[in-house]
Image 1 (cartoon, one colour):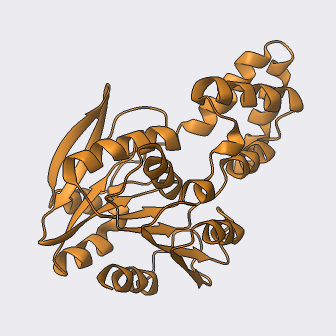
Image 2 (cartoon, helix red, strand yellow):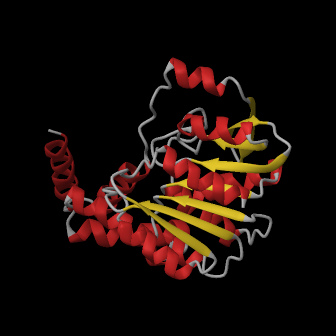
Length: 275
């Protein structure tokens, strides 16, 4: 049923494109960048209430941050699409027990942060605000949070991050966007116009947004964990990032999917951080 609805929407935009390709392309990008905000359940809310909460601002967008104090290195956690800071509950608790200070944030358009739309560039700018405030030295990022981390490090030329953990992270934006447009079945008119709109808004071609390229000259130690059976971000993305990110280690899992919420993954993270 969901796929039928998706194809109906795609066909509708295709029809509209023959009347106004600009409007159809705008709606296509809007759909791509608008996450569904999910209500947090009681357990999630209770956990986040154990943190020191602080709202930071990027222009008019408020960024919700959650902080657990510790004596060791401060670690910043970055979730992915349609998630929120509570996804890190078990890792946060264990890192805090090990003495680390931990910061988790809700990405723009997610959780209790502001903005109705989301993209990795905006996320990167939010990360910069958080890093300036809390001075973390380690980043752990899941999915598109990993691309945002790469953009952040590259754009702001950050040298204070000593270690970077990427979980199921995408490498090339063009591939992510193509999977979306293929799923929707957009026609060539819309595809051409969306490319133009991306260039106008961000000043770059879609091919230029590349996690692997952003990490080419990074000195920080990296840990890449990706599952062979990831049906959201293909495993090949991890290989592409690893080839470019010279100071990194790739750990391949099997049967854990995109979420990578497993004790074995957490153990790899702890060992990497403590080394």
